Image 1 (cartoon, rainbow, N blue to C red):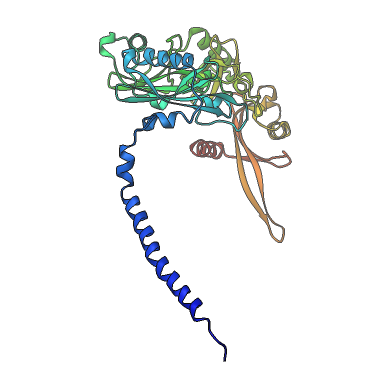
Image 2 (cartoon, one colour; image 1 turned 30 degrees about the vertical axis):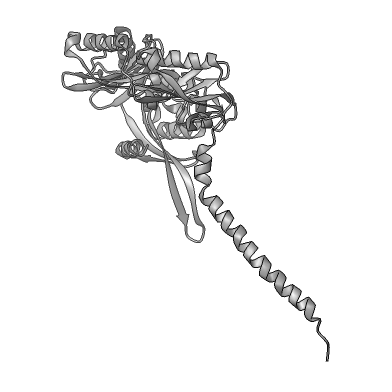
Length: 416
């Protein structure tokens, strides 16, 4: 039997009895200290009191004072608010991926052509405007969606009212501006209500303005300086008149081609085409923007209808849509017309008045299915007209009813 050192055991038990009260005392002291911390902290002075908003702002690189002044100056010009009421509430250094994004473009390419600058918020009169400014201050742009609430400047109002009154033959007091929305137009073609425009981005800042005239609504575009103004040619009730030179050029060509004195101009509307290629019915056109302003003129003999594109003076005149078709398709259709009608077809006078592309899915027994493109066309020599369908290579051309082509064209237009 082992002997036990009684003195050692007693010493160990005594040490535990002394530790437990000490531990409890320390724990109690810590709890009391934690409970009194807020009171203690409240009594300590804060050497650098900084409001929360300023704390957030200091996380950004400071915006140069010259740029702040330039932005505030622009806001003052737009709002006419007292300068003392305008202030920059936030300025954040940013890098915009390309000029389109910098200019608040809604549809931009993914091209990386960075613009370094600032995203700025300006406040005044309980309103906030979002600005973007480049690092040099040479470009200052306001978000059109934020500026929509700003009043249309009085000089621009007067220009719109004068233009509408002149066109309607009414005094300006009878014209009313019902809505004005600040907008950035992608390029001059879009500004001028062009239907066939390139995607080139050359922005024009301005306004879209709705005007009430004799119970009708007309839409105007005007740039921010008032140096450019355009009326939507689709607006009902506009009295835009075809210039006499254009009318004469159309009538001369139409009468000669149709060999008819029954030719009448059925309709005419102003139009802007992106460049000479799109003006001439080109199927594959470059993206450069060299606009041709002119007219789309619809002509009729009573039994035959077609349309022209002209420039503003009538010195350029096109009606043949042959360029839309692959050359082998156009040639195959013309040859089939000549084969069926002989010289009576007047091959030198053949014009393609309407061209529509149609996608079909053809299936062959045991051969599977495939997608193929067909072309539908209306061809005329001025007195007669023929409808045709061709495959994409022109190796199979089939005469069809003119009405089938017209129906297909109407369907294609409605699906755009």
